[in-house]
Length: 116
Image (cartoon, rainbow, N blue to C red; front, side, top):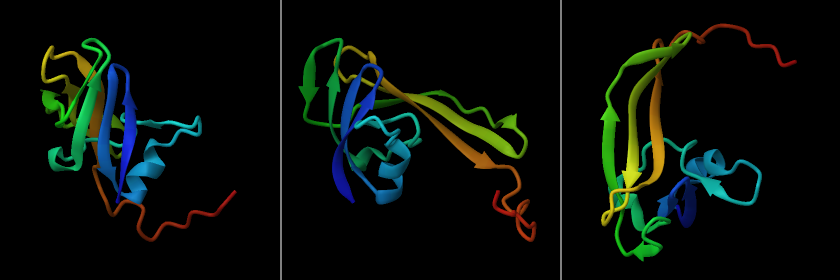
């Protein structure tokens, strides 16, 4: 795990990311982004910067749960939770997260998936 700067639309978070999370966050433009990662654990976030306050805080942002939906958004894909990381001082959004799960984890087991 590595301590990295992860960008959101309203600031950034310094967090301890796994190699898998860092790969998800890398969109190939030289920065890491919050949205593709999903929800980060509070104990893995160390600092946050708010563009609105123009201040870096020495602790994690607040996590605000927007909704717990369990909504099917695609074939075999469920949106479980949607939320925001918010500034501790002004409550502005630092970034958003989404948590997804497959409806049927075994749906692809045994199916041939030829490479194209």
